[in-house]
Image (cartoon, rainbow, N blue to C red; front, side, top):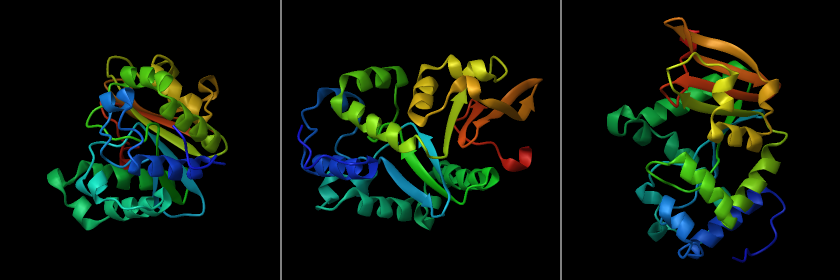
Length: 243
């Protein structure tokens, strides 16, 4: 696969990824086609809230593709321009008032509140994998990363980009045991995300956020500008008024 140039950084790489997608360069990639909706625009990042000191929310991958993201609606542009459209859509009243009063919108607003709680002014959502899927088997995704040059090169750029950035990873975990540092270590996916984000797991300090039935049910792990929030049973952030 030939990119139109040698990208110097993550943002340029995302423009090139978007360009290649528009020109159908991934249509014969069996690995990507197996796991992802490749007819929908890649979504590596978008700014949720502007601010001089943004927190980068490292997510898994975007969910199901929406109609406006379908390749049939795209003309030539770069990804930075398209990401501005994503910012408008995901913060709009139409998205807020979508099906089920849109829990996705509520999660976005919670992430802004949590960023403020941590001392950051803005929020940038950034994806571990930039391609859409309704659901993602994380073990299959980890295998795909090792087999797909596209995913591997994307994450090399992402790792370099995040190395000096404030990062927050949010993840669900099971409710069988109280949350601890071992909860992170036992998860191959979380361990991989930590590697991308420049997080050394053993250096993290844990702050319980909520306790239920004598178990820590949500917790914040942090070291300087690197953060992880784990919550039992929900890939979400606890309400700050529950602290």
